[in-house]
Structures are given as structure tokens and as C-alpha cells.
Length: 432
Image 1 (spheres, rainbow, N blue to C red):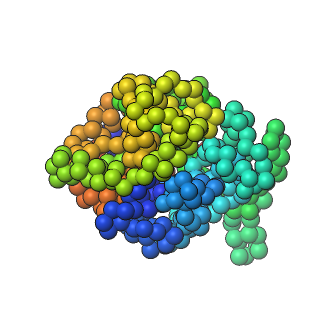
Image 2: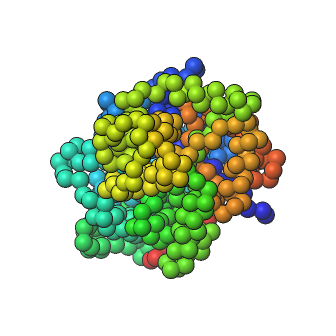
Image 3: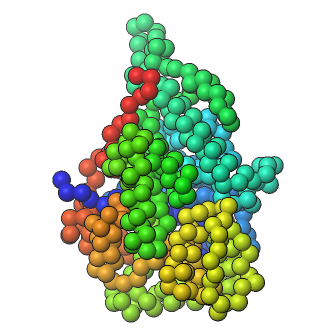
């Protein structure tokens, strides 16, 4: 069978555009099960691999309020497990402000509830605003990744503590568990001491899918070693292709094949019946952006206060921040390449928080996605609708059929688990 794209939908607040909630017909609240159920139904109608919930551990009430009021994602995904049948269910859970045992148990439980469709986005918390909520000091970038390396290893180990078939439930003998198939982990490392096992049996897909989004050197190495899916921040085809090759090229060093990771760049498609209509939609969205919101988001992405820079001054060469490398690297590279001013960078950040934006007809958007997919820059895409539900409905009803006509995307689900959608084998249990 010919290689096909994987598609995820990134559900963040009321839409991925910083002011998308102001569009006519857009949802203006994300604290509602009916809203996320509607989004999930659209995704399943489009045969999407995955619905992904972004998360944060601080409230930016004065910075970007439409992304602030959101429910805890595992709770929301547990509710979605009951009303979806094929769609993968993924969420962020920080390795900086969590414990491995709790995360392993939550996602293993979710995998049981949804029949093998759970995914954990293993990320370090980049924002120092989270630290006071936990009574801690925010660790620097290098330290966060050292913790993350060990954290992910512990979670993977806990998921393996139960072998398949450990629950035997023999009514004639009264034996419920085969103790020889349940193992302690006995992990003692630099940051964690975890005995195990979990009190959750091996999950339906062997273990939940691991998502990651790091683009720094430590982030790329962690992904090459442990990730199943990587969400990437892109602005340029050649840079995306180089990053794709770099990540895939690291995998053999960890005993893995390149096809064991799906790289999904984030993209915000702005759809119109004509190219001019798509540009008009983007201009309408941009007209809703306030200078305060855009400056705050840009400052978060660059890890610095940008309010003092003259708007029409060219963006200078700046060092990568100690927060998130991915967004800063992509945005600053684009600023240098296209000789952008601070005003240009504000507009870019306001549109998709630093992600890639493409505007055009359904055919235009499909052309671009096909070029990236076939040109060695992506294995699929993480779709970031500017607002819900309208922008997502449009993509599923117009762009997805175009991709299907070209043989680039499935026309129906052929698997029941997320691991199956991704074409990945059930991982070998280390204790088996």
C-alpha cells in the first residue's frame, strides 16, 4: 500500500488563532463537554488519526485569555472515550511538574477506557509562570531535559510491569492474577525512585503512544529514542526537511527504524472558495488581534519582553531563550530570511502563535500539504483550525476529500487503535 498521511487536530481553547473566538459562529467557551464532543465528531468524520489537547499549568488571564480557561485534559479525554470509537485521544502532561507513577497510571487507565487510543505528549514545561503554582523554582532548559529523559524511561518501564495475560481470572482455582507476569520496576535514578508495578494492567495497545514536540538538541535526542509521534514547529520547507532528516537520522543510533516515528508539523489552514476569499478571512482574523495580546504571546515565544522595540524596526539577531527553542528558532529564522520588522513578527504570532499558516482554496492547501509530505518534510500534519467548529468543518469537508482523491489519506478507518492508525507494531514487553 502506498504511504499515506497521518492527520491530527490540535484543540486549544476556542481555536488556534489568538482571536479566533471572535469569528461569527465560533465557540466562545472551551469548558464544555458538548463542544469538545462536537470537535471529536468532526475529526472522526474526517478519519483523523488523533485529537490532541494542549495544556498549560498557569493562567495568562491578561496575556492570551482565550487559551486560559480550559479543563484538565485527562478528565476531558476520559469523557470523550465514551463517545468516540476510532479517534486517537492525546494530551499534554508535563515531565517538569508531575510524578512518573501518576502519569503512567493516568494514561494507562485512559488507554483501557478508550480501547487502545491514548497518547501522552511528554513535554517539559517551558513557562516559568507554572513554578509558583507548585512552590518550586523553574529549572533551566538543560536540567528540564535531564529530568524528562529519566521521567519518560520510568513511565515506559511502569507500562511494561504487567505482561499480557497477567489477569487469568480462573474461577475453578480462584486465582485472579498470574504473579509471574507482574514485575516490580525498582528504578533508582538521579531524580526518581520508583518501585512499581502500576496497579493498572498492560494497556490494549501494549502501551500508550508517546508524543513529543522538542526541537532543541536534547529534545531531538529524546524524541529519536522514545517518541512515536513528533509535533514540529515549522515556517520554511527546506528547514523542515532538514529537521525531519536530522531526527530520522538519529534513530538508528537508538536501535530504531525511521518509520517508527511520524513527524507532524503544525499548520493553520485558512480556507476560501477563492484565494482572495482566503486572504480576506485571514485579514478578518488579524483585525481582531490586539497589540497587547500579540506582544504577550510573542514575548512568551522569544522568552523576553518585546514591548520596548519599535514596531517598524527590523528584528535583530537574538539568542535562543531558555524557554521553548522550537518556536523561537522557527520565528527568528523566518524573520532573518524575510527581513521582517517587529510588526511583522507580531502579526505572525497573532495568527497562529508562531505556527505555519497557509491560505488558499482546498486545492491550494492540498497541493502544499502534498509537496511537504512527498518532499521529505512531513509524515502528515497537526491541523490547527483557527476557530471551532467552522474552520475545522471546512477542512474536513473540503480539503480531506481532495487528499483522499489523490490517494494521500484514508477513506475509512482500518484499525481500532491509535497504534494501528499509525502503522506501528505493539512494543515488546521488556519483562516478557
